[in-house]
Length: 175
Figure 1 (cartoon, rainbow, N blue to C red):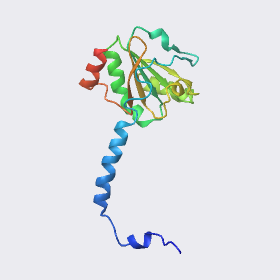
Figure 2: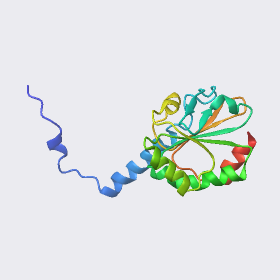
Figure 3: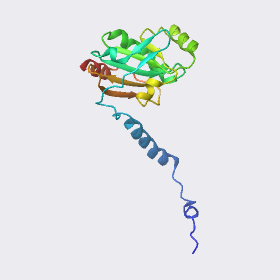
Figure 4: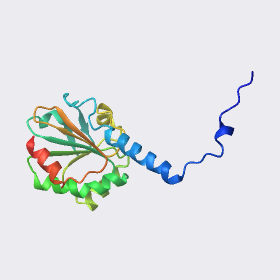
């Protein structure tokens, strides 16, 4: 007995593009919204690291006792560039919050030019080997972790955020 493929029977059945998109968009949004909203590390101690790029050195555990916003980014990353102004505004508006930006840039000159051109004055360090990002299992840029005063990861943000959002600001102040 020869089995015939099902494709010929469904050849003339076509879903309107609208119907296909109507199903695809909510599914994509649902998967995207859940992706990393509660990472495996939430509630666990943040992996400690030391990164030094020759001009700046960051040792995460030295910020214990402060709320830390740990941002992984790159100068070539469009969403990272998009969120930088609001991240800088947050840094200026809430000086008690330790905003640490770890760049994965390989090109030291491009990184330095970006910092000067964009007036980036928060704590930032270049980690081209992505050692710190690997500890957090970060694969998307930007990704940001909120670490409480005891060094516990409380939240993860994936993608560009509006750090001037009243909800985000209230959340950070609550810590």
